[in-house]
Length: 79
View (tube, rainbow, N blue to C red):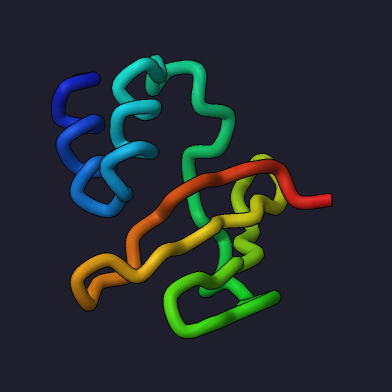
């Protein structure tokens, strides 16, 4: 159910990205599975980028540290 998907993914996202996810139809998300643990490609004290393999190709996940927790702030296809 879309509302269950949204509540699960919003808990792992920054507020702005969570709002964007609210406009997303989960049936149109091309990846359905994560295929590896990911590889950090850049990291600073409060931001990081991680390349993650999915069943629809690699994505670059941008993370931000918010109140001690790492949250997803953006996801884009990796080049």
